[in-house]
Image 1 (tube, one colour):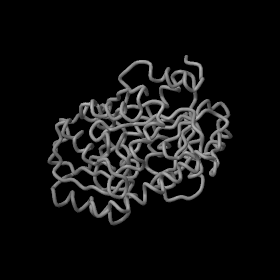
Image 2: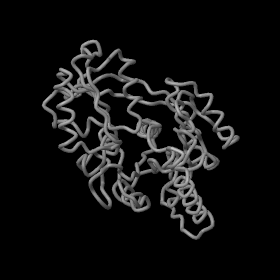
Image 3: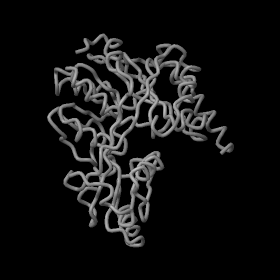
Length: 340
């Protein structure tokens, strides 16, 4: 991988130049009409941003603050601006929305969700759709500095807090670790899988004085095609082929092991894979070769596979939550929004 070090250095220079251009005013930072809370990370994929945003949106709703979600819509086949949810439920296809946005729309019918590379335009469209939006959640927004944010929440994965320590394409970092200094709050995710001490040390080094919270991911259950819960013991591993198009598929397979499921076969694809004809063929062949009679996958993958397989489809439902009390109140206070 050291052969990629020169490219990583060029990439790092470009990142620094871009951030500097915004910091010095050569590139303009735009402000939305509502407060903006960014949820992001330093690395490419795998820190649990989607389940964290889902949890945070529900917590805000429970406290009387209606959020919107502004996303780029990774993996979508559409261009321009797409209303994924109008605040009364999903109104766009998975293909047009992207897998993560579609999964969020399904879980959060009251939350307007707009996919657009231009997040300011997305914010304005969300405000037009639902005038009582109180805060915009900027999904995967840490590096999207063109939109002014009132709070930057940065997630660190307890299983790989420094993401290997190298910038793209040599490693998985989008920005150098020193960028953590821009964080207002740090949340260490996946604390059920690894000791969060290394992540806390990283935050304390690069963002001294910044509050550090911890989050756990827990399995809610296994659901079938109709959404009914199925017990893990009723799904013998020998009957299943596991499918994942995730940045960190190993985490999904670890979840299956934690449920006592050892699939007869496994098929992985690149993150956000749209599951075209070739991919569907691979899944069917893997099931046939392993003797599996059903497919088990993640919630993000399930929205793209539902109704497209000849085999029954099961999805593992998970949720994330910050372990300490007071995180949401801390965020609302920093946003100057009244806590309930």
